[in-house]
Amino acid sequence: MKALSESQLLIVGLARNCEEKIESEVQIITAAFSTAKTVNWLVIESDSDDGTLMKLEKLSKKNEFEFITLGVLRNKYPKRTERIAKCRNHYLEEIRTNTKYRDIDYVIVVDLDGVNSKLTKTAVESCWRLTEKWDVCFANQSEVYYDIWALRHPVWCPNDCWKTYKFLFNHGISKFEALQKAVYSRMIKIKYNENPIEVNSAFGGLGVYKKNAILSSEYFGLDEKNEEFCEHVSLHTSLREKGYRLYIVPSLINCGWNDHSQNSRFLAKIKTRLVSFIVGFVTLFLSKQKLKVILKKLK
Image (cartoon, rainbow, N blue to C red; front, side, top):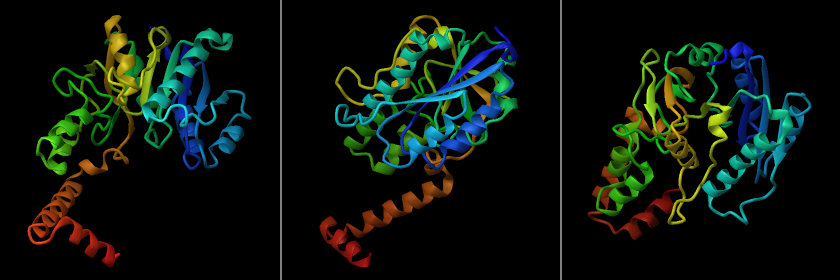
């Protein structure tokens, strides 16, 4: 494996309505990977209606940062995951066809919504110290691992968590219990000093890919029933079929609690359960319609 200090990196990501966080995220992530020989950026933007494009223009004044805007995609691709897949495939096509990326060794895929706020050089460099022969490394979080939708592991999460949630909810399980069983119970804490966990898919806001691995396939955001599907899973399933090895690296910490994992916290569970109980108790005496009218008047 090529040493990080001798490697050329390309950091890629998607941007939509992230004007408040994108500058700080780019700064933090760039600093974390600064041990590399070169670090360049390619961001694909679409459908922003805030000041994201202005922020991207500002960032692009630096030679190592580039972005491409695809304009408004939501009219042609109304389903969110389909739009995301289209944008991700655009950076793959750029890497394949643009000669400036010919000598890239690793492609770093990142989210730009704040989940990489605690990423450090030490965390990044830990990937290059692993004894496992990896093709892709995924981030971990210091509290609980949050990205259950992108996760596929034969024991931990063998299926689509949101399809599981819908199945349970549609078969008489309360919303609280269905979310707990399908999603939040799988948000486990992985200690930073544990061994890497081999997975069939993951993400967690950051993935370090060998270039030949990520370019061997593409993203799909819809399943065979034309329903929304996590685009990372489609790419990673193909990589696994080709023999590539994917790991969650416990020491690759990129954040702690975040907007995706907050609801799994104990107090949030208690509050949600209490509200659910109160609503259930009240509806024994009042119809849901009357309850809605009362709540509306109280606002």
